[in-house]
Length: 78
Image 1: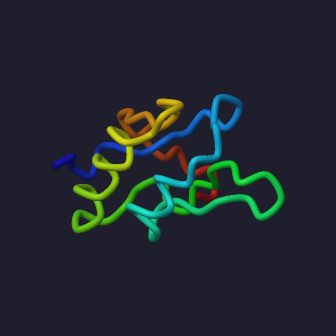
Image 2: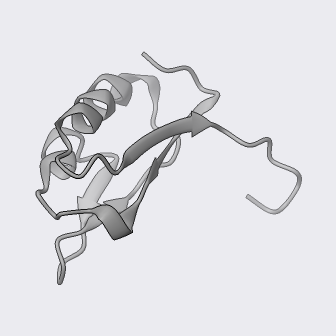
């Protein structure tokens, strides 16, 4: 399981629109209605979602889901 210092990212340009991410982790991923490409709903999923997010990453045929350390918020209104 990832900790709260991690966040999810996706490379939409490499997405093959299989929908595995939205099927496995619907609270974190969705699909664009017209193209079927991944839409990231939650960059920092809650702890209970991480297992599903990791399964979505392993199942993604385009390997577009990435994990990275979250950048510190610098008072940019986020």
